[in-house]
Image 1 (tube, rainbow, N blue to C red):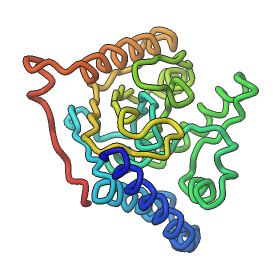
Image 2 (cartoon, rainbow, N blue to C red):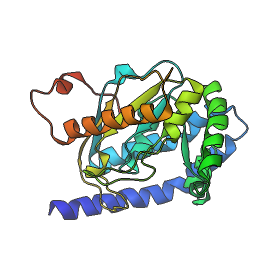
Image 3 (cartoon, one colour):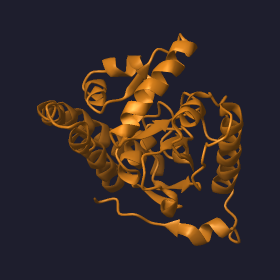
Length: 257
């Protein structure tokens, strides 16, 4: 019965998303002449609205550990990638941001077109050398404009309990720009799986690590450090211990803003 209810709620959420998105795109398109940061705030309103619908319809909430670890300067966010959920929620949790993503995503009707309005770093993953050069060149520009940069080192959504290969692009960008790195772990995939139509109710945990200063580090060493922290933190999130010190640091944030 619970599964049937979740399926019905998920179907309603998807229906509303399909109806709302084309109309919201008209608002986003009208914002094109604005400064990138102002345009981002309008564009990200769609993500805030989708998170609101996920909460009231599907029962998906979230809590954050380590909000105090977010620097007050443009940073590079290196995160676990399990779901489409984090692409929405990060726009509510973190300061204005752009993503490093595969350029094919920009071709997706409405979603991709809106994504293109957020100044992403859209790379061709078939040429790794050219992609790294593009990430650094455009990354410096985005950081200078006041954006954080979100990179999913595993490159694609990975199922809960699994681990992908951590690409070096995010660490390469950090060591070439000097921007602090914020490692992030979460378990969104347990509630909204990859390509899953049914979304399960529950509370997603997002854990934000202490910023890492890349000064004097090699990209491979920085990448390994980020990977080690994220995977260790995933173990804490997936296997909560009542005596775990992380439980004392939970910082709920408003999901209505």
